[in-house]
Length: 300
Ligand code: AMP
Image 1: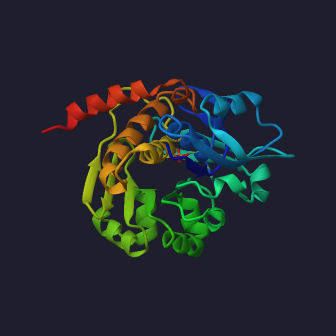
Image 2: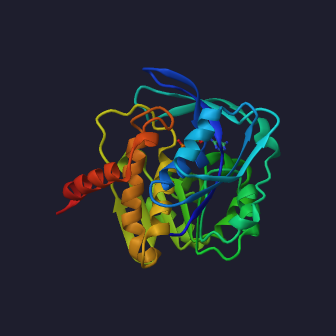
């Protein structure tokens, strides 16, 4: 079974919703993606935390058999992000971002990681994503995620990164900001022109759209009656998707749609608890049950 290398932020998240407030949860793009991917494939995590990082969170990674050989533990504080959701649970604003040890992060890979076939560059600065790719020996598949911040402050580096990717994942507002196109199909066309063969635009609770050589695929979100905390849903989606691709036989083109469905269902669990509380508890069989329900809901 192939492994997935995941680099991104490993954070402590303080999250406020209209119903509750939870400080210092395990978060970060790489944490969410890694736990999601670990449902399907072996995961190698590349990130940085400070000496304040709780042991119980290291234990959580270990419970999911996540390889921590690439996790740097450095003197100082772990990256801390605080955010607050509005009543609709879609709009979120950042309250604080304290970089801590993240400020000095250089994702140098252990030698054993360099030939990992599947690479997920989860959301971090594009210069760091480049640095990881520079160290890889011919990976089979490279996908990257990003956020509006990098479009605003690191655009040239992000544009150069796009040329090095097989697949790029972003949300609809980021796609608009990056391409200047309001129409999603026009935006997808522009994004292909910038490099990646596969482009996935995430639409939050409305699912996602894939554009690739096989045409378009409209991936539904699993409908939830109650969203507790959507933080990390996008990371869980792409993590679950890459985890599945690493284990599926027959190539990306054949498996990407199925992989997106599994990612989408994994993300639905993420939204049902604060931080990683819910995703931590699920099994592959829980995912399979929801996939079967989605199949029934979308067949016509
Ligand atoms: P998402 O809900 O998919 O946008 O991802 C939320 C995660 O992104 C949280 O767990 C945060 O710790 C992490 N995050 C927030 N700001 C940044 C940043 N500037 N760089 C990397 N990760 C971040």
